[in-house]
Image (cartoon, rainbow, N blue to C red; front, side, top):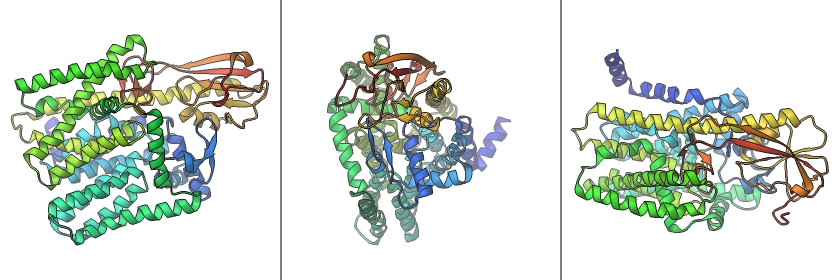
Length: 556
C-alpha cells in the first residue's frame, strides 16, 4: 500500500502537494479572527461600500481613534481579495480562511516550480516549506503575508525561467507579479533589487531584461501619488516613517535584536533546522564552534530576558534554553546560505543567499519589531537550500530525511494548534463577557484590540477612546489581560464585577508574555513560540462609579 501511494505521489507531485497542504490546514478553518485580522476585514467592508477609498474611515486602534490610513501599515490588495471573497462566501471565519488556502497552495506549488530549477528534490523543498511553523501559522490568518509570498515566489520562478530560456514574456509576468506583491505588502518592493541582482549576475551586464523591473517601480510611484491624493500623504513613505519611529520607541540594542532575530529565524523554520545534523559533516571544529556559540548565547539570552520582566520566574531558564537552541538554528540557516554560495557562486546561489540574508536583516534591523510574519518570506529559500545541501550528502537515506520532516511537521502542527487555541480562547472569553453583560444597564465599553475588539464590537460593545469616549457612572468596561493598549479603571472610581477566564488547550503558545512567546511581535516575547503551559485568557469587567478613568495623558 505504501509503495502504491509513493508511486502515485511520484507520478502526480503537484496534486500530492495540494492534498497534503489541504490536509494540514483544513482542520483549522474555523479559527476565530485574531491579532491584525480585524484591520484587514474592516478595510474589506469599507471597500465593498467605497471601492476607491479602502482606508477612508476611522478605527480605534491605540488609546484613541485614528484614521485607518494612519493605523494600517499595509497596502490594500489583500483587503480587496477579502472583499471579493466575502461577497461570495460571507464574512464567516471558515469561508475567509478557506479562500486564503488558495495563496498557501500557490506558495507551495510556486516553491515546487522554482525548486525544479534549483535542486533535484523539489518535492522535499516544498514539503519543508509547508511544514515550517511560520508557514502554517501565517496560512491561518486573513492578513496579507501569505498572499504577498504567493506573488513573490511565482515572480521569482518566472524570472529564472525567463532568464534561463532567454524568453522575455516570463520576465514581463514576473514584473507584473512583483507589482502585485508590492501592493499586497510593502516588503514586496525588495523583489526589485533581488531580481536585479540575479539578472546582473546571470547576464553579467545590463540589458533589455531590466525593462520589466520598471513595472514594480512605476507601481510604487503610482501608489504613492494615489494615496497622497486620498489621504494627504503617501502611505508607502508613511509606513517607512512609522517603522523608524516605532523601532526607536520599542527597539532593543543591536545585540539583543540580533539574538532575537536569530531565535525567530531558527524557530520559524524549525523543520529546516532539524535537518541541520544531516547537512554538516561532524568534526571537532563544528562541535567546538557550536559549544562556544551556545555558551555565548546563554549569556546573551540571560541579558535579553531582562527586557521581559513579565516572563514568570519558573519559565525563565526554559525560555533561555529555547532561545539558545533556536538561535543556533538561525545561525545554521544563515551559514547554509553562505555555504551554498561558497561552493557554487552562480546566479542561483546568489539569489538564495541574498533572499535569506536580506529577509533576515530586514526583519531584525529594519522592521519595527521582529515577528514571524517578517520571517515568512525566507522559508521557501531555506527549504531549497536544505534540498540542495542534501544532494551533497548522498549517504543520507530517504527514511532518515522522512523522519526529520515528520518531526518538524509535528512541531509545526503543535505551534499552529497553539495559535488556534489562543484565538479560540479570545473568542470564548469575549462570548462569556457579552452573554452576561450585554443586557445590563449603562453603556458597554472595552479596552484592547485584536480578536477581542473584533468580537466585542460584533456583539455591540464600543472601544474606549481615552480622549473622547463619553464614559459615565454605571457604564460597564471590559479589560482583557493578554492584550495591548490597556489602562484599567482606577479602583477608587470603579468596581470589579467579574473575572472571566478561558483556558488554552495547547502545549505551546504563540503570544504569551508569561512564557516569552511573541510570534506577532518580539515586544511581547523573545521567542516566536514557546513550549510550556500557556496562561489562560482573562477579562476583568468593571462598573464605573465616576466618568473619569485613567488616560495616557492623565494616569490615575
